[in-house]
Length: 251
Image (cartoon, rainbow, N blue to C red; front, side, top):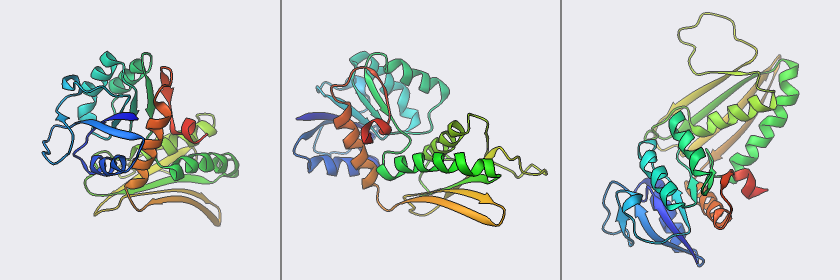
């Protein structure tokens, strides 16, 4: 039985993950971490992982960047494996993630879905072919009104994967409102839309002379991210210390 602690258990994603774990015969949700109370959770909930006394095999995190310092510190002390799904982390927090990975396995991904991780590979292949043919590259992402960070971690990961495919020759542009100049051929524009209940839309646009190639992914339910996190938890449990990604999970 895989014993899981869920960080951010009372949030929207936390509730989805809770429901999925309850239906998995090989998993048990032993505790939750959240600053808000939920007497109906069905398991003990602590405001800080450091206060948690339950034994676990892995922590799944769907919290916020504001909660990350305390979570990373506690995981480091307890040497707990961590599936890290929260985006918008600061440079100092990313350094703490790296430090944790030296004592425990950490799987960090901007997006847990199988489709998005396939998209990462597809846009790299497209970029290698189309950038040399003078195609401009733009990324547009759309999410619900409650999402705190912009652009999304997935949009940034897409941009970084394209940049890596092009030998790190690109730079990212988030706002053109104060610019009055021609587009740089090596810039990747990233635009964010926030509104309503949009679960997640990501589109990479390759715009050439007289033709446009669009590669996109649409998420219709948060359950795809939760299912990916559970697959990651199964993968991570028992692994040696180190930093892993969803690419390691899907092979």
